Length: 328
Image 1 (cartoon, rainbow, N blue to C red):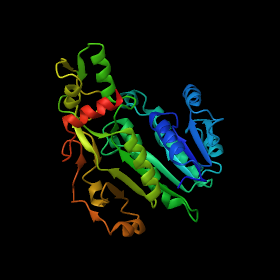
Image 2 (cartoon, rainbow, N blue to C red):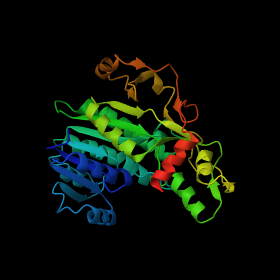
Image 3 (tube, helix red, strand yellow):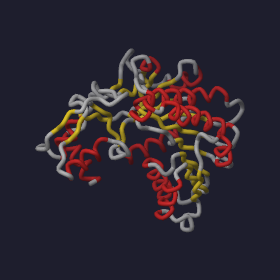
């Protein structure tokens, strides 16, 4: 799909962006241009040391911010496909810096849409988070708003051949800010584990899964879907016990804006959600044409909530140990 095409990744120097770049370079040898769009000069410099542009002729490092619409428009010139991964993500930081998150996650998303509509872009896949479902924190609220912007953008494409869709998934194991690296680091230093609440559950996804999902969704998207993968859950105590069952635990309570359990499909969204097998697709009920195309799939049970606590599929302790060994 990407051979002889131009691809742009916003947030291209983040953990997801770097992994996606490496995957595309390995799998699609004839990709015409791969643009790494990010605002972090140091991360671009460090990434260039690993991926020398002189050896990978398709690579372009483009310094810019999604808040800057003019810069985005320049970067999007000639681009076919966009993976939008740029975002401010720290839940507690968002509570104290709300408008900074709005400027990046909401206004930045609208800038992505506008730049795409003003260029030759054919598909845009925006990455979202489980915190966007029934949000209780500012970060989740900004991502929900962004989700709705991308879904509704399909209503204003006119005669242009362009599609916008969203992929929502859970916590990426070993990503920046995730709990597992913090627990491992404290164990190495012989420090007690710090855990917010022993009842806490989360959805699990590994980085390679997120990459494969993103590519698959961009390939199959018709425009207007909000894709949700079927993932396994885990309890945070499973992580602590898998690392060191003898380490003492200090419970510190939920952080500002933090949920005890995460959700990816709310009971209200379930009314417009279709089961695609390995994925769910939430469809805007106002998009009658898209709804007709998905009517061949089974709808979810009314008022079903897809959350990390009630999830029927949990990681086993052995699976968690294998994941830890893989990355340590």
